[in-house]
Image: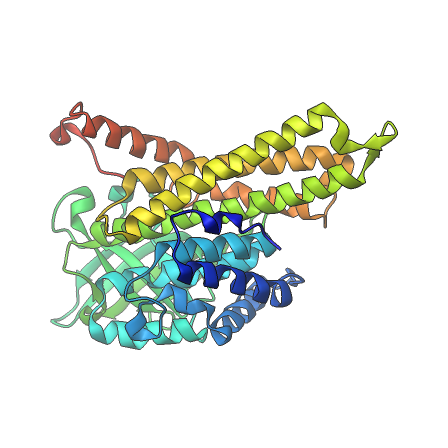
Length: 400
């Protein structure tokens, strides 16, 4: 079972202290031995199980079957931390139900919320967030997919999206496209597109070192009702950033879960493995590695739950806090997992061991939802702006 001693920190309420151990207990029974040979089926099964057990209530507001009046970032972080400790694909499946509907929860009309959110909450409907393109990832202002008027009640989408999680298995996609209200990021809008919409096709699937359902989407004259737009025309960048402002901290929480599991595996190895006639844990170098990992884990947890608490307490934006949490936690987890692999020696790189799978799982988290290098730019700009050192008129773009 994952360590939940941090629930005693003042960031949490009694509701969080009830939620986390209950999810951990459920996950111990239902998440673990997942067949990765068919990740599509595995994700569908996990989402269905999470929905039936009520855990997906965390990803939608209370009015549509959720737990709280608005999305509670601390709950989302706790869920991802716990699920990641058990199984990376379970964390992925949960996270995409939130990311793929967060924009609808924040900016959708009442009709869109009632149409999509209850189905996602129940685990009957898989969600996806389609922002990245072949030549536009971290630089959202470079998007080239277009949404042009097609009569008074529809728009026509043309372009490509790639590295889309749940690409090919989702029931809907939140798609960001250029509508031309202004240059760069000012001319984007967001739309909910059903997977079966004519003109939307899957251009290919993407295989990665840690199997997840990823795909490339092609839009060719894809006709979408104007009623499926999220927010006003030209609000796309605002919709994307507000959504990432909530979910970026949860990426750090997933990394935290991976790191905690690696540390637990390393501790068990240090106690059990005999070297030079004594447990591996008796060696000072081993103790130093474990001490560094324990400190790194606590530091990351503090950053993550500081950011989540700030958002839940009403902060309109937590750009700096969430970027710090995401950057530090993902880099930290890479180091902690690497130390665990080293302590396992040859067994650490053997396919099928837990630390080996964690080593593959963590690598992507340092890239998606803003690579570490992008987070450094975001943080630095925010720090400089707070000190009055940057003239916003001279900045190209905003936080990614």
